[in-house]
Length: 221
Image 1: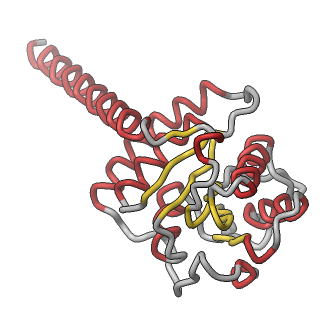
Image 2 (image 1 turned 135 degrees about the vertical axis):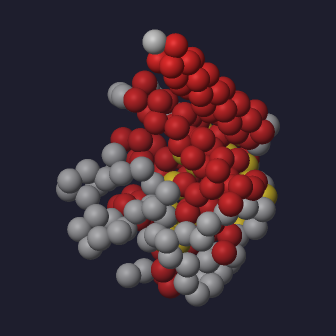
């Protein structure tokens, strides 16, 4: 009986310690990134290397989800306002059938963005990989990150840890379904990426340098 009580006590202490660690990681990520979240008006004319739009899913017909559409629209508007010189669409194109970046580019084209100013990162399989590849593969130094605010803290934290000069603008023009699920998932993701930023593993794919200052049509295909 004493052994069982002792085990329960240590298990409880371990669980509380884990909760404390995750809470500290989340607080640190959010607090450290908060000062770099700007309004659209504050980002006007920054002239950064690019506006980086982070992918988040397409529908079965290949069109962007509502959340992704809002990210693209905000990214295009920031590009037009001179926040960034180019658009970098980073998402999952892991199979021929699933292609986030094609949908992202198509929506930007429909909104009048010249094709040469739209870069596609086909291997942005995670937030960490998108930021890593923005710096190493596309040679970006200064980026304006666009995503929903709950996700923006983590993206900015990763950017800073990788040596990017980054600010973020939130794309939240409406409420989205599944908010509780996303917040729980993001809580865990912040802890995971806190560790990723400590060890800085290589992304799934790297590749030759494609300068963001060049022609986005080089990233087609």
